[in-house]
Image (cartoon, rainbow, N blue to C red; front, side, top):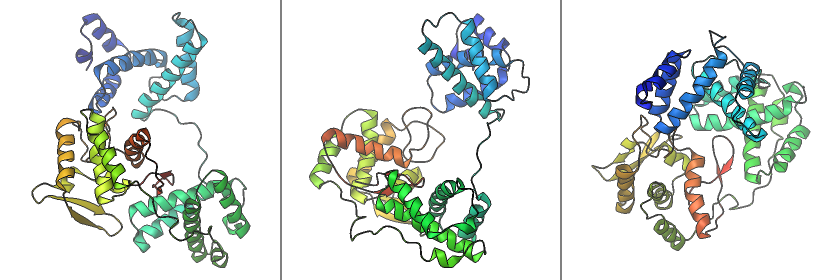
Length: 370
């Protein structure tokens, strides 16, 4: 790897002779596979060189935050190329970040004490029940688990047992969610997950299930949760604005057309794989995880052409089978938030306003579809 990045024999020898050459070289190879350019890899190699010289007294490389901070301070004290305090702080931040990433890659970084989730064993039991007895989809389980964990962290600060939860506590938590800016729909989803958890706790005799039956979420008015999207004229204007030769626009145009024509959710588009586009039968097959089956749709020529152009001109080569991949390293499948941004930003530039709601698996309000 060093021979690929550097031309001078002296430089190659210096990198190979430094401590932990195998660990550094494999880490660089890992970054290269993720699509990082050679310039970034050379800079990273130089930073790793500084890191290993400061950590060479730890032959097993098992260090924590305190040792890394001390190493960063030693480097900046010896280096005379930092005329400003701001540059010193920036270098120390980068040094610590890359050191932690490298050590975590090898499983050597000693993580600082993290506060455990209160009542984690109860949440694990509920998760197992949802999976094995209720047969809920992985997406539903992950979503519901996130909401319950948020409540348990909040309630755990009061240092009380789960059996002491009262309706007043639920009201207080809902008020806290409202203070954080969550919508009524988001708060109701939180409340539904908490109610289901407490009912399960009642069945396990951890809690009085009769109190769970009295939990109510905020009032949701008719059609309040229906998204209000842009008009078709605005969609055509958006698609036209993305009809350029820029890689991001080529990719985002294909994403936009899947949202607009098929009305897919961001989670559904993020899970589309290369094999889900059936070119032989002109179909796009959308996995439906809750129903545990796939639903075929006719592949509209305009959508097919947009996807073909993206695959031929833009999609990077990588090990992932997902259809939409990030353009910048590290190469990875686009997340729901990334898909939303790919459409929302062009809409903002055109002055197209809309109201939508999508509750992602992490429980954050993000965009859904157009």
